[in-house]
Image 1 (spheres, helix red, strand yellow):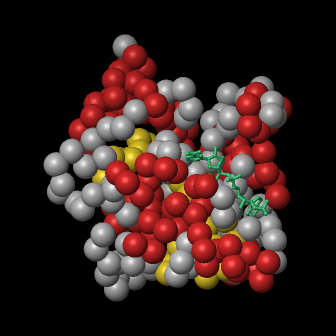
Image 2 (image 1 turned 45 degrees about the vertical axis):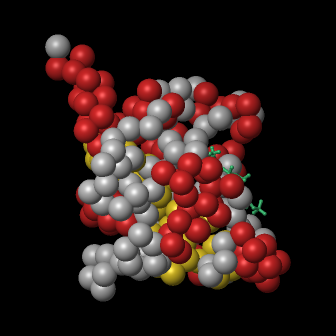
Length: 224
Ligand SMILES: NC(=O)c1ccc[n+]([C@@H]2O[C@H](COP(=O)([O-])OP(=O)(O)OC[C@H]3O[C@@H](n4cnc5c(N)ncnc54)[C@H](OP(=O)(O)O)[C@@H]3O)[C@@H](O)[C@H]2O)c1
């Protein structure tokens, strides 16, 4: 992966909240792409330092407050724990919501069961002053480090993103591109419905052209 350029709109530091399967894979992939990576859980930084050193060599174990100071903060905690995030720490930040509602793992949660909104819209309402971008939720943690390719590679895999804040989406698109994937803007945060669990996008691996055509087909009935 190519290293990030020194451009003000170019993210350089990636904070990861969650040091589980997804958080550590994102952290390793970001390190490979040349980012500085700060990893936090709900535990004190000293308590996770050894684990972070082993699982994401090169990343720094920090508190959630320190991770929140990064250019982009990736939230990779189980969705049933989203209310343990501190909205104040994440105010004004670009936040990637990589979480999915998965009842067998999360349990049936009223917030998500009896709701028309997508899980990321609910997360955005909770993190009211953050700029939430939904992405990285529809690639398996085990694929993330395998499928990434340089820009322009034939059949490069694409990842969709959705969000209501254009600047945040552009920042996240650059990050996604650097870690090995074409970023395809699916539209506002509500459009993240098209790549939630159970959808064709969630269940597959697609190039940018394929993703755009799936997204266009999903929008088509609304025009009829
Ligand atoms: N399985 C996949 O391939 C895949 C792919 C994309 C997205 N996802 C989604 O990604 C999310 C994370 O999944 P996972 O499998 O990585 O979970 P996991 O392995 O259970 O790891 C969760 C991590 O979050 C930490 N955590 C919990 N509360 C926290 C908080 N308030 N602040 C910071 N860290 C906190 C946990 O540590 P402590 O409890 O010690 O704080 C733990 O390190 C889920 O919503 C999942 O659906 C999964």
